[in-house]
Length: 167
Image (cartoon, rainbow, N blue to C red):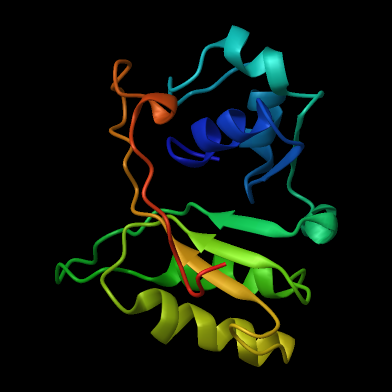
């Protein structure tokens, strides 16, 4: 629930019931108090949805009712200027614990081409026993948020999403 995930969660929460997950309990506590230290959202914006259409949690099992998972984790760069996929891999492993037949996972982390299908999908298949494009589906949406930009916010930019099937 950082500078990408939080605005995305609140945008979806204007239309749907959303569960926002973060591994950082301090972050969840701050958000529940209406405090966004990334300064992407105001207290007023948070208070409109938190507790009504947006539930925040650090409990992975709270996601078991979900059918769509949007992974928005950072992709840091190593000292050798290679992407560190550890956050994406760990998030994928977490999603695999609650993924069910018919569910969809959309990755919205800045990664190089092929990571979704070559790194993430095999983890989901291995950990769940489910079959890609038969039992679960995957999409990718390039991150389009520019941190701190109050003019081109998530609700004002074109959102591009690709899917593993036409559906």
